[in-house]
Length: 198
Image (cartoon, rainbow, N blue to C red):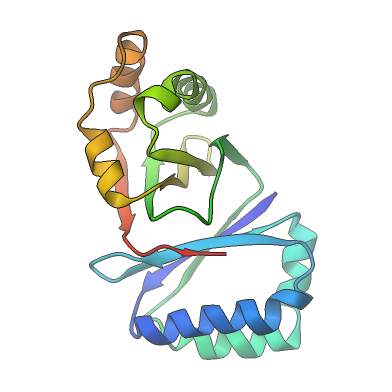
């Protein structure tokens, strides 16, 4: 899998959403290897979009389409200032991965945690998730460096997620939860109250 992470500040949220909907209706049918996307706008106007393709080649082929270039020129005007692109083929999913059924997505931008540590904690979490956090559908992590990543957790709803955050972890995961919270100390959380899912 190959993921493009697109970030910026929103200038026209409604127009941006219209542009994304138009891409799905008009450009998606010709986008070879496109797997899906997740995005949204935070309360303070931060836009983050994840576009997933089956390979780098498919993503490049899509970017090179004339209709894609025209669409992006129009879409870029929906942003206030520069737009950044981060790309990676180093992606992990956990539990059920992403889901179009999610009512709330929380994006986490993390540094100071390694692949092996994160994978071990994901495995421990998966063993208790059904009982402890049924609100958590699944998620993904895009590694942007040796110890930095950005990813998303998909929840049934924001109300369910907030309630789940207050539940103490089961005894067998208590130590792992403390380790996880320590590793995630350098994390920025971006709440997408109305996630855009495709």
